[in-house]
Amino acid sequence: QVQLVESGGGLVQSGGSLRLSCTASGSILRSYAMGWSRQAPGKARELVATITSGGSTNYADSVKDRFTISRDKAKNTVYLEMTSLKPEDTAVYYCYADLLVVPYPRNFYWGQGTQVTVSS
Image (tube, one colour):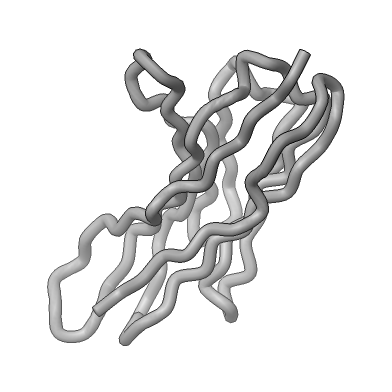
């Protein structure tokens, strides 16, 4: 059984910052890419940021230069540093991880989501 547990969401004023964390636990043999997506009310889920096992990163255009993704491979943890937050960043943020878990095939796993609300 694998669990991805997110933390760090909350309410912040426009222009403020938040740091999200997500830790994967379980019988993890290897982690590949990890990342974050988000879903605002009435909108489709959007891929926000991804980081590969080698440390390469990719961002949605809407968050470039404001969000930074990083990871601690030893801790199976991924972070999302969010700065200059805007009301349109309000959403439930979900972390995901591409993992090889005993005794299962390689697969994607998702966290339960953490709410980020940016007030204007």
